[in-house]
Amino acid sequence: MHCQPAPPSPADRRLLIAEDDPDTLFPLREFFCDQGFTVDCVVGPTEARRMLERFPYSVLLTDLHLTENRQSEGLIVVEQARRHQPDIRAIMMTAFPSLQMEFDALRLGADLVVSKPIALVALNNAVNGERPKTSGSECRTS
Image 1 (cartoon, helix red, strand yellow):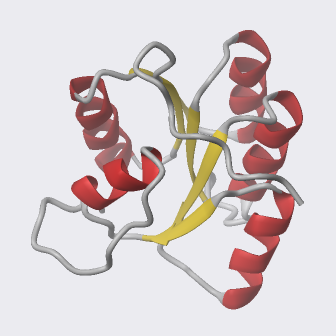
Image 2 (cartoon, helix red, strand yellow):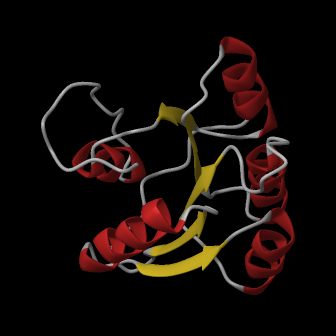
């Protein structure tokens, strides 16, 4: 089991987003850039591994499904992130939550699993170390 990483400090605000849906990816990228993060985006586990080997990240946001195959590739990304950068804050996003998937994500190193859609404000709180609240009328991801 791993310890919860500390929230990112202002000096170390680099975020990796693994998401295959442009309708989700671009708003997330824009939002977190506005929050002061340097944001890199990838669409699959191979690209994620390459970025994790190249740059230090304070936070990973990954969707569960990253291809049309729906093979839970996000679990691979979480595992790679934890292996390459043990202190990264890893957050799994999914529109298909289940107890088994959440168990697997946490076992592989996710710090938190959030259900989509999630309010951007709540996701920002999660990125900064707070547990997201499930209610609210803020702008939501798809």
